[in-house]
Image 1 (cartoon, rainbow, N blue to C red):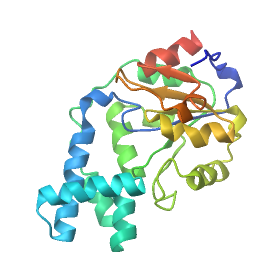
Image 2 (cartoon, helix red, strand yellow; image 1 turned 180 degrees about the vertical axis):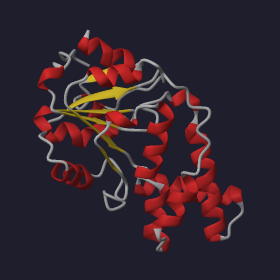
Image 3 (cartoon, one colour; image 1 turned 90 degrees about the vertical axis):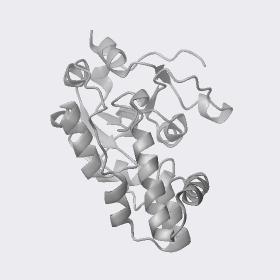
Image 4 (cartoon, rainbow, N blue to C red; image 1 turned 120 degrees about the vertical axis):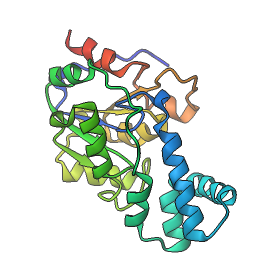
Length: 224
């Protein structure tokens, strides 16, 4: 991937951050809890053994982008109870990185969260990390009408709702595919690989402008 000059923070009006596995390390495996609770909900809702429910859960994720979307499309699920159940998580295993707050503080410009989860979940995570005061707002799965990233429509809705100039914005994500619509809108993009040994697909490479395994360090480097 060709080297792209890092953005000048003074030129960035809006910083858009994904939440899970981006603002904290993927290695803490909150996703394991989340996946387990998804499986439990699917098992209860469809009256299936847990092992069969997990197969359904994975199938819907791959076919629809999220298990929630699959349950809504295939079974007419009303999403509220599902979202409350699956995000009732123990956050004690998430480490608090003392560099992240100062890194965010040093960045000029507005800061937003864009998550496939809920604003309630985002508020809990940000509060746990002690960084909630740095963010103006969250754009969540409800705001996106339950269409998950990387569907284009919620990106367009976020830009309109929060009066974002994509040409003066940076989006930070742990899933490279989710940066494709952001780049298409004209945003600079940062992929938080987080030490995982992942390769970019050929259709993702041109949409990822920067890669980091350490987000606080990358952000602090911009303002040093």
